Image (cartoon, rainbow, N blue to C red; front, top):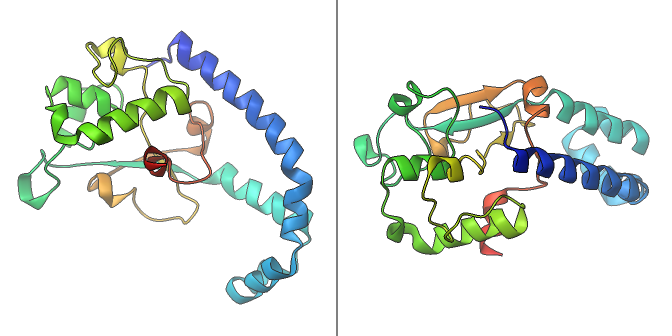
Length: 201
């Protein structure tokens, strides 16, 4: 599924801002990578990189992100079946077979006519964060998308697999979707930690 005009503009905006911020923070980051406590931690966990210079460490970090896969998970079963979650955390295998793209949560909830009141506090927090924090296009009514067109303005949430696990997050299901770094680079915006945590901040 191709990106909307809003999504393309947002992607360019975030990319430009991130480039500027990364450049301005590089000096402080290099100083931090040279700090004694960081060096001690590296000696304890991974002595093979402890002797690298701050510049070499930064290059290694960037190289790791450049080749890391982007992963996401979804369920093999409908909610509540086989002891699984009792709410929709994403599409199931059955639904995905009939789609040409990986659906986001809003798409699934709308299609399944989900009762939003079951997770009302979370739903409002998620919508507010996506609009005011991430810059996604607002729905006509807060946290209540009325059409597939509205829901497709939102995102699928994934993880950067820097730990090289063999699967996506089991929280979202038993089936994993894996995007190659090349494909992900054209469509993915990365955050420094779990974006789900921001809802409660």
